[in-house]
Amino acid sequence: MDRRDFLRITGASGALCAAGATLAGSALAQERTATVSADWRTFELSADISIEDPGSQARLWIPVPDSADTDYQRGAQTVWRIEGGGTAWLAQAPGYGVRMLAAQWPENPDIRRITVTSRFQTRNRRVDLERPAPAGFRPESAATLREYLKPTELLPTDGIVKATADRITLGHDGDLARARAIYEWVVENTCRTASTRGCGVGDVRYMLTADDLNGKCADINALFVALARAAGIPARDAYGLRVADSQLGYRSLGKAGDVTRAQHCRAEFYAASHGWVPVDPADVRKVMLEEPPGELPLNNPQVRAARVMLFGAWEMNWVAFNHGHDVALPGSGLGPVPFLMYPNGETAAGRMDSLDPDSFRYRLTARQLPA
Image (cartoon, rainbow, N blue to C red):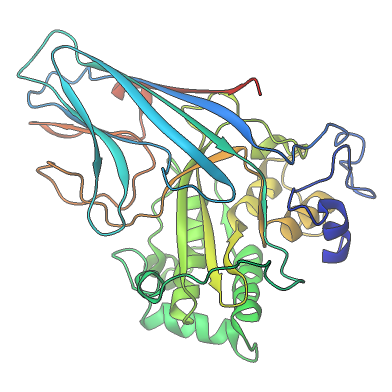
């Protein structure tokens, strides 16, 4: 499938697929007969969290949906109920403006539990890179673009990262062409590793120095972001959570109901001609590893379709939390976390393991609400 095929399927409306469309010629053709929504859909996300750690001075920091309205996500509202005499409030970390719900409890209550419920709307997102930007396009501010060119603790832009970006983009002119070269290089040279804890860490210098380009979404998409920044292209990770099954038929690219382990990091880069462009090379690799029957090659029709789609489009069965790196948790006695995509907690005994919901005691559930 080439890009013209995909654009014909997606249509000019900006939806990923027209109603009832199928990916003709691919192995998914018989599966992809369900209607793919071009409209806003409303979701409810609930987090039920208890602290079982006996340590005193218990605190929690829970990521919540981004409250800024965009053309693909809007109307985020969050409410909560806290037990055990604790207090909770919406907070924001300095720097990237990461929103979260912060909570704390008095010394050693019998119950330390909080339930957080968020409602929001999403619709499928696509930037048509073969047409001029639509009327009313407003360029991003220079200050914001400078922010998304800066290195972070785990996403440096010098040394081996800069050298690799220069090599990948050599001979490619313009931000779109250079970003596409980086995207294709990341798709072709990385590998999703099922044994990686959580979504990975995203230590880009280590990945390149050790020639260990394996991991999950927070590794693979961080590699894209760091290389783009090193090439002078503003780029950012987008941390969030899958909240529904894929309407495109990809079993590996969706999750509904119990989404406790459905965290997913995506990426964006900025093109002067079109604004922020969604990409997701990590999900191409996820399709390769997990889409039945598994271990699919790059030339598989399902993989080729995902590879085309995920340069310029996101299926919005996913909610965005934030773009933050090196996140300083308000009131924490410990250092910053690389990113905030999972509930985080600490007691006087130290930081709890956010990647172990069974011992940390949290459960996330998502459902679509009637129109």
